Length: 112
Image (cartoon, rainbow, N blue to C red; front, side):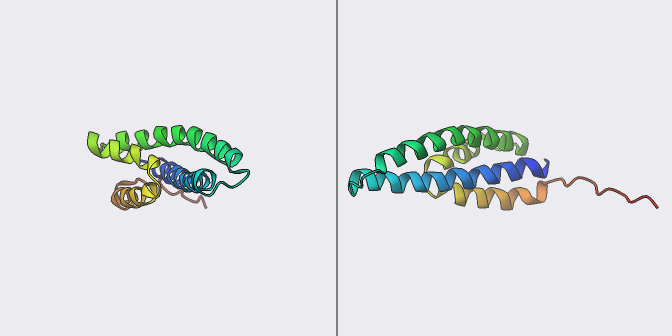
């Protein structure tokens, strides 16, 4: 498996995780604290998270298929973007496990 597959999954896991935390805080501000302007904020962040979660799903599925994850493990990785902070923990665990399986491209040899 190429390092780029793991890297793009990691980036999207962090982006999705941060946006979900921000969205959760926005929903609390809107419904619990009744803060003016929170509705627009929740709408914008919700749309961004929704679209980027689709990208996360694509990259996570690609990673799982190339790493040959079992079905239940693949589902857990895919669903991690729906639980606040879960994406960070799942990403860390997956990255540690797959780091040994990553194939780095051969270094370019210098011509004299």
